[in-house]
Image 1 (cartoon, rainbow, N blue to C red):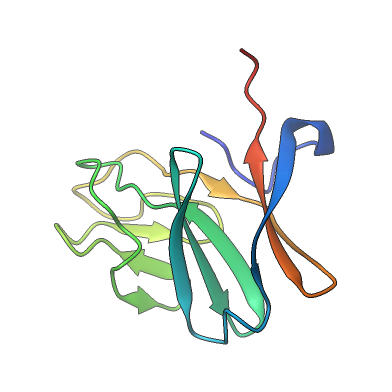
Image 2: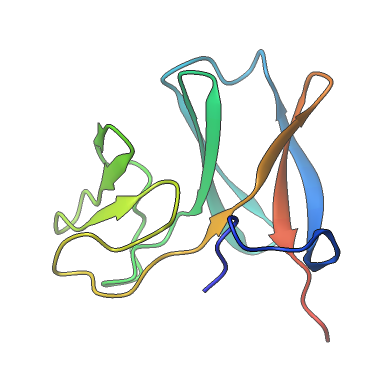
Length: 117
């Protein structure tokens, strides 16, 4: 599982996904990078990016309610930590990927793992 707290620069490719003006405090964006579903959150000026994929049933998770740094899956109520991707409650038992986020100038960039073909 890819966790943005544990990565080397050569393991990711940063992709610009939005400007800071497009994602105001308390908002989220859901999009795809290639075929990877991703959700980006702005919470108090801190940015978090997770895979928009509940590990319980492969459904979307990012449209769920936010409670602090936890996202609640709208389908079955599993909770995940936005910083670590950790599955916090049943029915999910497997963590979800999280991705590094950086701001360069006015651009928000997400680090996507580089896969070797």
